[in-house]
Image (cartoon, rainbow, N blue to C red; front, side, top):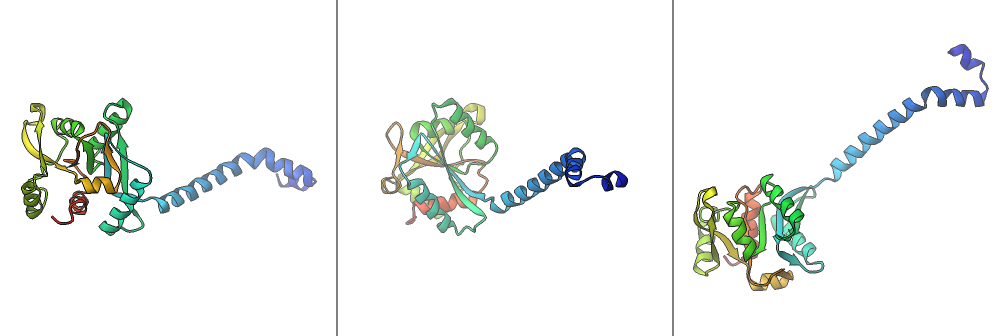
Length: 211
């Protein structure tokens, strides 16, 4: 190969490299690019510290960014963490399937939803019983003020009636332009397998700062 190389002119050497080494060069460069991309993506990845979703409840305009930014500051998060706002309609098969998949995967912490969605989530056994989850003083304040809602759990999931929802204050809904798609009250509920229970408790205090 050395003898062949010495006998080639410049154009021949270039062609020789193309014929015999170009594929290896492409593979090596592609591998290096993949490694660089991986580390850049890893450096820019932010992990959810609170995953909040709207079910049959939407936020108008830029209010979702305002809500997540304020929660980010309230929770004292760092640059590697984020607050996620997601939304779906219960009557949209693909969107609702995605939401229930996220619940099953233990990714969603809480919902802001309409009453129809609340009772559906309660029946499916997906919601946290608030008595024993919230701080006792917060729970008592919410109960005294009539903010707690009963949800009926299907017999398939153990059955029973439990305090599973919190009626959202009207001023909070107005501040962030939150509306139930079918009208009526908005309800806050915590998912039973919430991955960030402390952040979910903090969310309740954020919404009810006087409790």
